[in-house]
Length: 220
Image 1 (spheres, rainbow, N blue to C red):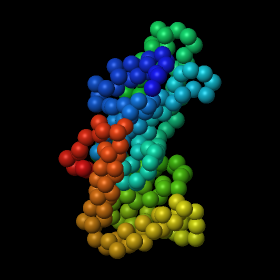
Image 2: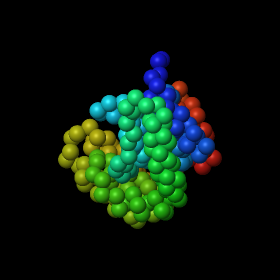
Image 3: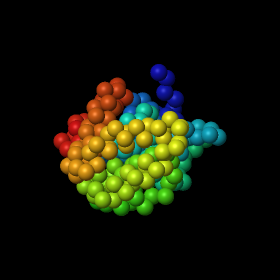
Image 4: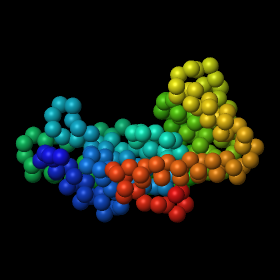
């Protein structure tokens, strides 16, 4: 695989700034991963639409959902980019600044490892996408906030009851066959979330691009 000069510069900057934090590169891609147990922070230096360069996008991927490829389940807008215009030195300087912004986001998102803190922010998140309500339910169950989690469970079931799109039917199926039988058992609800996280951590570790994902003492 031939790596062009601007990709080499992107990798160099990310390696110098992010690797000392414990962040690792996903294969040979422009995606870097910070492992936080029940979620991954994804740092992506997306290719520019107008030329050679990179646009920064940082967000969370919840490991209780089995989704491949990695999805941005929680993220904000990152208005940072670096364009390659032919000067290697300038592009490296700009990429070091971009990597520094990424570092700030990585350190901020590490605070989400505290599930009570994460729950409050995830619930307040107004992002609209198909799994939003389900994710709010799961973080509540992970944090043993069963009452609130049950409310999101009911909401998820109602939202997808008469929706025959594949994703809606998947939520209905999980709700009916996985959650409903244990809805009255606090311990089993949390165990379900932990088991889902553990299974997906194992799933990702089996991929050659994710072999640096280590076993976590709490989440598998």
